[in-house]
Structures are given as C-alpha cells and as structure tokens.
Figure 1 (cartoon, each protein chain N blue to C red):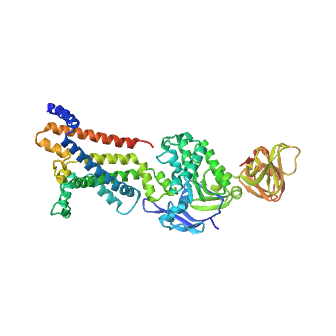
Figure 2 (figure 1 turned 90 degrees about the vertical axis):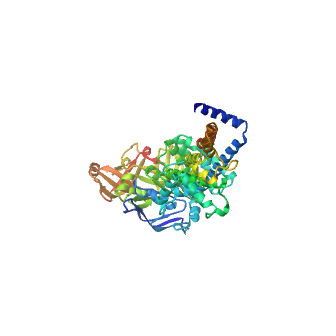
Figure 3 (figure 1 turned 30 degrees about the vertical axis):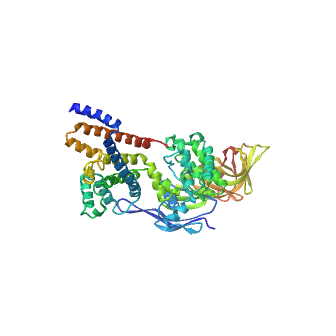
Length: 362
Length: 231
C-alpha cells in the first residue's frame, strides 16, 4: 500500500497588494511507510508550507494528497480532524498551553479519547523521561525556557502517530534538548515510524534520513538517497548546503585485536576509530582522502583502497575527483598541483587512503 | 455636608449589621439582577466572541464596528427601547414583563453582551497564532480549540467580564426605566440612591453608595483572584 503521495501540489499565497505568489510549484512525492524523508532547502523555499499542507492546516491551490491511498484534501472538517489525529506535527517554535505540565502533555491524548488510566501511564512515563517529575503540577508557562521546550517536545511525542512531521525542530532548542529530541527520533526510527522532516542542519539530515529532497524556490530540484544527494549535488544550493560528503551505509563490527571498528560496505572494509556496532552510516570528508598511484611503504593510514578515476571536476585551484572502488564512488578533493604532479587522468588506476580517525560514524 | 458623609458611613454599618430588611432586599435584588445578567451574557458572549475572533468572513469589519458601537451604547436609550418593547402596547407587551426584575436583567444583559463579545474577540485575536495552530494540529475540534483559546486568554477575558459587571451593577438609567424602582421589588442600589438624594436623605444615599462600592470590591476581588490564579 502506498503510504503518502503528493501529486502536482501547488500553493499560491495572495499578497497584501493583491498579487499572487506561488510558494510551491508542482510538487510530486512518494513517501514510503517507515522511512525518514528529509526536505532540505534555504529559508523561504516552502519547506514549512509543504508540511503544513500535509497536516491540512492550509488548503492546496492545486494537486492531490493521498494518505494511505485516500484523498485527504477536500475532506469535511470532521474527517480532516480524524486524519490530523493520525499525524503528529512538531513545530519549529515550541509552545505550551497555559496549564500544568501534566495537562499539557495529556492534551493530545485526552482529545483522542484515551482512558484516564492509559493517559496517566503514558504521561507519567514521558515525564520521567524528560526529567520533569517534580514539576508535574506546575504551570508549564512558569517554567524556564529549556524546561518549556521539553514539555512541548513531550506533548507531541507522547502521541502514538502514524506519520511524524518535524519542521526544523532542533533549530530553536538548547543543546540538552537537542539530545532529548534525538533520543525521541531514534525511538521512532526503531519503531519504524514514518517521518518527514525539514531541516537546516546537514548532520541531522545525514544522521536520520533514508532519502533527501532538495527544495529550492518552491520546486524540488533533487530527490535521492543520502549518498546520491551528498556526492553529486545537482545545484549550487545543494552543493553549498551539504559541502560535499562521502556518506555510506554499512554494518559495523568491533575488531577486538586492533580495537578498531570494521565497517563493511558492500565488499569493502573500512577501519574507523570510533567504536560502533550494527547498522551505521559513515562519513568521510573529501579533503581527508589522499590519492597516490602506487602502494607506498608503511604509513599511519589505516585505510587503503584501490580504485579507478571516473570523473574529474575542475574547481579552479582544486579538483573534485570521483574514484570508483568496486561498487562505491568516493569523492576526493585535491589541489590542481597534486593532480598535475601525479598525472591523474580519467580511468587512471589509483589508491585512495584515509585515516581511521577521520571517519565519522552516525 | 461633611457630617452627612460621616453619618452615611456610620449608617451603612448600622443598617448592615442590624439586618435592615429593606436594605438587604435592595442588596439581594441588585446582586441577583446583575449576576444573572452577567452570567447569561458570559454564556452567550464567550462562544460568539471566540467565534468572531477565530473566523474571517465577509462583513467582519462592519460587524466589529457595530459591536464597538454597542459597547458604548447609552444605557438610557437601551432602557427606552426595552420599555417600548415591553410596554402594554408594545410588541412584547402581552408578556407583562415591564417593571419586573426580568426586564432589568434583560436591559443589563443587552448592555453587557457587546462588552463580553468585544473583549473575548480581541483577546482571542491577539493570542499567539502559534498556540492556535499547535492546538489545531493536535487534532482538536473547533469547540475544543475555542475552549483552549479562552483558557489561554483568561486574563483579558476576565478583565472584560469585570468591566461588564461593574457597568451592570452601577447602571441606573435603564433599570429605572424598565424596573420602575418599586420598593421591595425592583429597587436597586442605584435607583434607591437616586430616590434618597431627591428626597434629601443624603445619609441613606451615602450609606447605600458605600455598601455598593464594598460589594463591587468583594466581587472584583474574587474575580481577580480567579484571573491571576495559575493552575
């Protein structure tokens, strides 16, 4: 069953002077159940509007949205509310209601008609998790900014929703609460919940996303896996936003002898110094990778992989080189001088090398 | 005059604590009429005000202007209109409500409703749009949304209720026209003060004034306590 489909979505806003501004043009998306889909884009690109349209907070000018194969635009108010109760929209600016911490968190559950016992159990569990046990009966508005944010986060994540819409949620949080938010998102990922999030934070996008869409000026310019988008950005904005990264999915295992983490990506094993086990994403900056034409004698580099140059992109005094090693492409940045000295050409056979300490594991 | 003022204050206490039957009747009539009027005005004004505050529709501007006009509607004129409606030859004359507390409640109610609608509307409109959207996206119905927003702007709304109540209990023009200032029946503080002043009974008039202020103070105190209470 298709989970969420957006077809030819267009959104116009009428400006004060009577003119019309199109915020979203012809958006087509297919969100799969259980995936984390991230929308990246500059301010004013229409990310929030897109999420608001899905949450039925605003009408679309044109297009259709299907949620579990049911058309959800043009529904009656009552039916809209039923759909909205299956979604959870976490907003950029966390706000709380003018009532106690407990009642704030219980609000969504109460209007969903849960029994008192169920509400009590869920709310108490989450209050424990956010560490506000002693403040349960205090008015949420009288709390400190950070505590209030925690109440606002809990208010949303206490709901057991089918689809989570996270609109730049970490942008306004203090660092402690970003960690809390991460643990909530990780729980959702473990429970295989579907998430659509918009973000400004590239690490956030890399960490959680299965797929990324780039939204620029109301148009989706690129959709793809994290690796695709981050190694071959299609436009300047994307390139600037991501700053180019090598990101791979793999399975990590700690090697007891070397005390390094061995990450298996297809048929390549990469050694990393950060300890991790299981499914991971690893990230290597293109500047951290060196190239040579032959196997040098001993170095401190723990990773040495043979490959072939597939593409050279001239960037002035530096170059982007795509090196294909078995099935994976590595993006390498070197100076033009090094390229000249090494006499690197298309289809040249090379060795790439990088340190185990340069690998970021997520 | 100074003596009469002091004399008035002393008389106020004497009348109160000797449980003067007529005075207590006046107190009960006044409080009953005004609290009933305000209570009904809240029941009608809160939902209407929040609806007006939430919705955008054609003619809202006109309606708002009309509402603002009615917030300052001259009570005497309101009394006159109700008098004409309820008088024997008027369209509602058959109900026989003229010179009754019901007619007085009606007059105060009609004066209070625009104030409560107006303040509720303003309070809800000036609320944080983020809160409104958060409540909607939680999946609340329109009634649940209205109720949450009313609770959220509790302070300004109670301020409006206080204003409406103050106007109702101290109102004299309309209640004297439709109530008729009948002893033991429709006589209130304000109408009794007017009568006593005309008769030169300044002491009694001042005594009534002092008690009126005292009662208004106590009721305001209770409402202010609810207003500033955090739950």
